[in-house]
Length: 283
Image 1 (tube, helix red, strand yellow):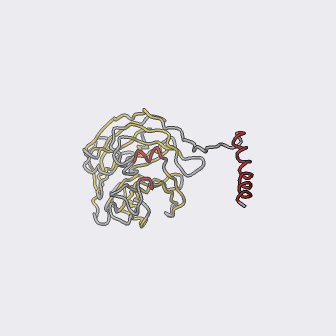
Image 2: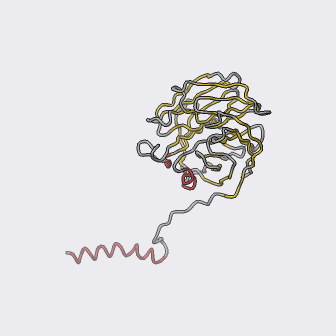
Image 3: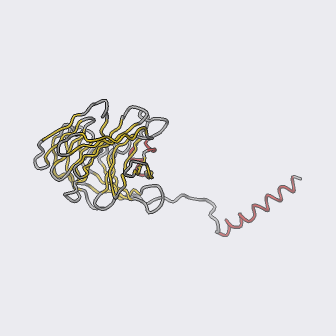
């Protein structure tokens, strides 16, 4: 009986062995490695303005920039860096403004309850002219904290951030950070994962800033590194393509493209409370 069973097993294995020997089937399957992102690119600082609210990020429009702290926003003139208005919020309701972006005459801001759990987020919207709070979009409990949001071609792109211990929740780590797509009714409609080459740079923190550049590429920043990560939306598959890393005189956090000045970004130095204007090289 044992002899018969052995004969059957050898007979079954023979075709597979023959295929391997002939080269029809690879004996070892090796996962393909994505191309390495371009390195050695550097952004140039062109201006710097003191702004005590510059702790989480900055937004910008044609005439002003908006320095962002947890529950405060300072409005400054781009021409001379003079503060002209501010908004001060309820620290209980607006606990952690992470970033803002200007949409026409509105300042659209990502807010979360970080570091509280469960992770809950909202979008807070202000009038850029008066700095008055206009409305709130409650996103409720999510599997990450909302750190930035931007509308592009009818879709709202956003980041849900997760962190390593001791700031992790439900066993999640920085590797659970993801890019989420919402429609204009704020219903989730898809998203992307981050590639390993970028995730390795974020640990133990997560994405803090993000925005599409004039070239259609998505530019991202982490918590404190002096780098900007450039990713491409893939033609297929769920993982973003990390194509370049840019050295920049910033300290991570959130930032904004100056849509009136080509490849110019407004970013922050969190440690000194300053808004930094930089020029970004073409990719």
